[in-house]
Length: 382
Image (cartoon, rainbow, N blue to C red; front, side, top):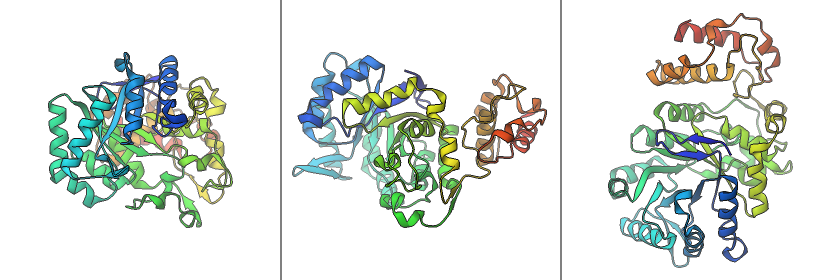
């Protein structure tokens, strides 16, 4: 298992994590199965958005004696009321649910306390200006949560939240179809058939800017819905009109800026094992570029997808990384010191480009790589 830094938190998290969809399976026996498999395979991160007390209790029992082996991302403002899930901003309900969560999980702290499901600007302002964020900051100060997170499907809202300086981890929906869709307060818009009826060209700029802003500010992204609820794996359901494999979806998410871990929505231990197998898959099994380039009615022409088809460079330039740093500068309008430092530790730089064009002949998306290298050399120096 490979591990990545979760933004600036200092946490080292497994590239493949666990969503909580499958924990309730087989009369809650899956909780132990999942954590046993995770410990065996080196998966150390899981999400717990559901407030279902039976799920939390089963996970707490499965964690006994090995709490320190897992990094828990669990959600505040997700409460259980009248036998069902509810999102709440009522501070009394939020506090009660948090205490119950710690008790059922049999732990005295949560690693990442997620402010649950903020998809509208009005809701973010309710959270930020009201008692919820104040309470979450109190929990962090007391060591009851280690880091503050937020989950969202709306790039506009997510960007405003992370730019507040309070959010250290963002849980966000990332896949090559959702990335085409503009910001919306209705999560259902992400997969409405009518939104894919007309030709779509390139990633939504707000989503691109969100990922790059997270990278710049050191906010780690944990990915939900990498498979679009499974739709992307089924040609008859995929909004793109063509299916991707699980490995391609995982690799796409893991090559976006700031992404630290992709949370597997597995519902069985066998599905979880299949997602973990990504770590041992051959490069050609992970390669999403040919599939994206062939999607009907969708074009990423001229847009770098960080797929690394441009490699190998005869000058040994890591073209994808140089382009990623260049895009961070473009998004910011200046050169942040951290970006400059990361660029300069690359073994080879854009100024070494001999403009042979070999990279451009291999790029599935017809990116003007030579022009990008010229611009990067001018910005960062030769």
